[in-house]
Image 1 (cartoon, rainbow, N blue to C red):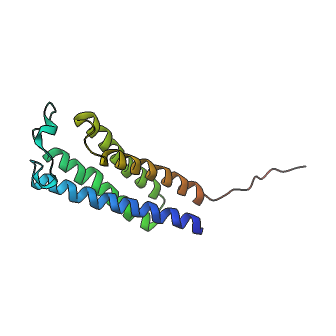
Image 2 (image 1 turned 120 degrees about the vertical axis):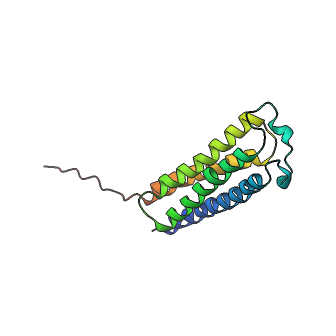
Image 3 (image 1 turned 45 degrees about the vertical axis):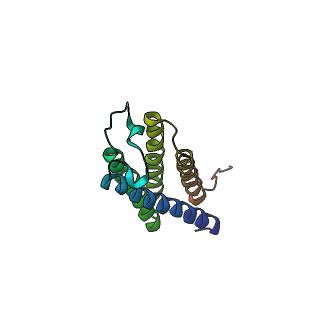
Length: 144
């Protein structure tokens, strides 16, 4: 693997691990204290939404976002053929979570655009790393 590609993998791996750990910890804090006390989130944020507390969002953050990013990190370290699919799925889970969160509760924290940007960067890096690791094929045109 080229040194440039290896650097992309390291950055991508770091983003997935960081996102996974932060999401799991934050999600579990919401599950353990669905009133939002552990994260300083007032229940008023959920007024007018389908949620009475932060339990379901905490579960989604833990399992959909957190675990998908940890699984993507593990798959990337194994360098199998599906690593970039796993990376894209995990990044998109984060992006979907952020978009749905903003749609439901509105813009309430600078972390929403930050993690939205992280998701977009992970998508970009996954595609870039995939392109850089693609075997090049020589154009085999025969001249007679």
